[in-house]
Length: 372
Image (cartoon, rainbow, N blue to C red; front, side, top):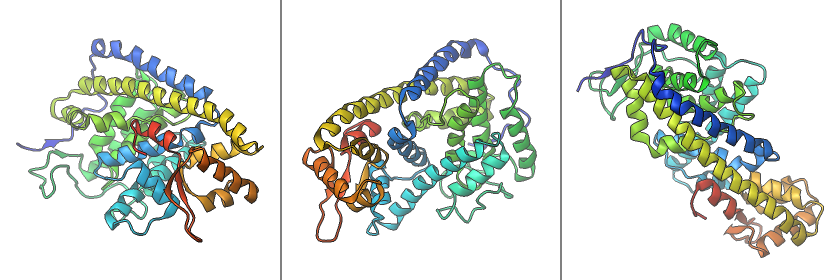
């Protein structure tokens, strides 16, 4: 089978079968609006949905082959476990970089439009000091690349992106399309943008993760969601083969409509899943507010609860030192959390060695299954 080559001259698509897409656009917009309405109701959503943000980074990285779990990432972040194998530490660092890159992009977009500058700077953070960091972080590739099984050649690759010499003009066209006001629907525009970015494959590494990162950033800048906290990688990871096949079919058969339909269906499914999980997290928070206040009888009870929502795996000394609660009170609250089993002990304290604790109920909601 010969390699599929980039669809030169076919972006943006001259024609889409809108009759196939219109029945999906309304439900996608409605599902997104329901999720955004829930975001508006969540106090400090960035804190309460922090585990979902980490899970998105985990799943987007897993599509590219990493094996780290959310629990491993959060535990490593809390303890910097030097006993982990080198490969696992690399996987975890890639996930941590994903989160860091997302935060950097959000900061940039407070004053800049979504643009090549934002993409390049975000890529530099994504690839900093991880596998692939020698592959020109923050710079477009200047050599050919191709996608396929390990060891494949240009001739035997599954897909060959655009040539490096044509990349600058292609990225300029990509940037122009981001801001094209003539596209009839913003979600279809986003679908086309994601497919085009993955087909261009403008960097030597990190293209998949950055391409998926652009989805919530576009939705946020277009004011379709009030915070860039839309998590789509779970659907792509669960349907990985179709995800790649639909992207490939754009260049292979010019099937932009098939890809857009798949993307809209992914938005619907993921918006509904995000809404379900965020609803459960908000319900958990509301329930624990009352319980924790009664159990601790402390003016710092809600502050402590917020802290463990944002850091659902942590060391006891970090809570005492960083939660901005008087140390004796922090120790007493932590003792109450242990005794009432709000927290699960991952590592018991021993001598000067601090204990490591997990907010299991929150983590299991973010994972979508009982892991802790």
